[in-house]
Length: 136
Image 1: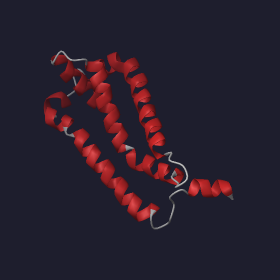
Image 2: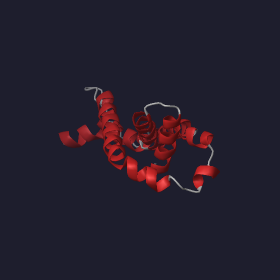
Image 3: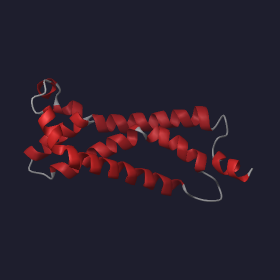
Image 4: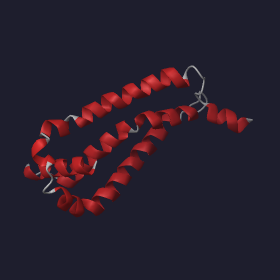
C-alpha cells in the first residue's frame, strides 16, 4: 500500500493537485473494498429485522479506515517518499496498473463478499446471530 500511496502522491503532485488528501482517499478506498468481505460478514452477524444497524456499522467501518489512513500517511509521507524515490519499480510498473487497482479492488471485494454471503451466511443462517447469542 505504501508504494501505491507513493505513486499516487507523485502523480497528483505533478498535476499540481492536493497530493496528500487525494492519495489518502485513494488508499482508503482500496483498503475499504479489500477488507469489505470480512467486514461484511461481521456486519451480517449484527443484522436483524428489529434494528437497522447495517448502514451505521458500514459508516463506522469507513470512518475507521479513513482515520487509520490519515494518521499513518500524514506521519509517514516523507519517509515513504524517500524510501521509494529510487525504486526500480518506478520505471517498470506503468501508471495504468496503479490506477486499475481501485476498480479491481471494488469488483473483487464485492464479488468475494457476495460469494461468501451466499455460501456461508445464507446456508448456515448466520444473519443476526449476534443478537440471538445475547438473548440466550
